[in-house]
Length: 434
Image (tube, rainbow, N blue to C red):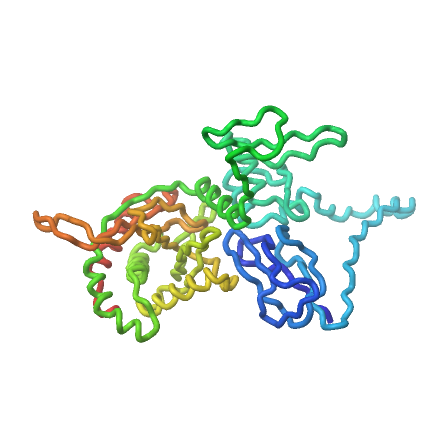
């Protein structure tokens, strides 16, 4: 029997995915769990394995198309096995009821009306879209949905909010021109110093190259705009002495290497963050309307830079791991993120995120919170610097750590107490934990 290939749900709040590339073509032989196609969502860019072995008999969703999760995107069959064509949607019967039935209906309570198109649109919208609508007092039924089946997407509601508030976010795409009317030329923005094309000009602009955003870049853009709109971002920056940690790394480097693990500063930071969260559980919480949701487990997100954008795999129950376990887990999720081998449950459910712009030389950054979390830690470059020690100039291994937090829930005093604990835990790291 042919096996349908469906769009997987790559996270609890993900309602759709975009097919970036089909790795196999129609007629190709495939093995079970062999990479079949590549997708992108707002949380992950991943290769999806084949659900069964056989021949890729049909592709129903082309590259570049976005469909709802669980939609059939292709079919795998056995050699010589026929694939049934999908049945066209059937129209609902609309014949009028006979007079006797109509007369009888007046004496019986009416059955509940079928959901309207607007109600269906609301039901099809993802939990994330409904939450945005609730927080901004927006009736989803008033928004024209551009998603599958008329569903309102994040782009639709963000565009609606941008239009209403004049924030400069572009509104929904304009309707296609009426037949017979000439289409307007595409507007292009020339680079500084280049000649702007005159009215009605067509063709490329000298000195300008225009490329569409990649699917993952679009998703990241939507997610970042949503976070800035949702959370009241505030940042605190602490200067932290890593000299003690540097000595511990030098002492244990070869021992960890024999175990196949590279001992990094990030693992030490993760241990300190987890210990500090235990003292300040609100840092690991989230907001759900007027309720605060406290998470017992620390599911640690580690931001990983890819050529196509940024992804945040999650280390579940990170608080149960020691320094060695965290070192292994961080290296593992980072490697598999770069090779597009992450599993669906490894890109959602995070409660706190660490991002490391310092690996590229940044002194510090002001990171954007990863929704629905309420805090994120940015790690600046770790390097030797001159500092004052007991009224004298000394050279120490230093770095700036930045906490971005949601001021709707976390006050500055709590954020700074948390960061003060992180600083102390790093500067006085317990050697018995190494």
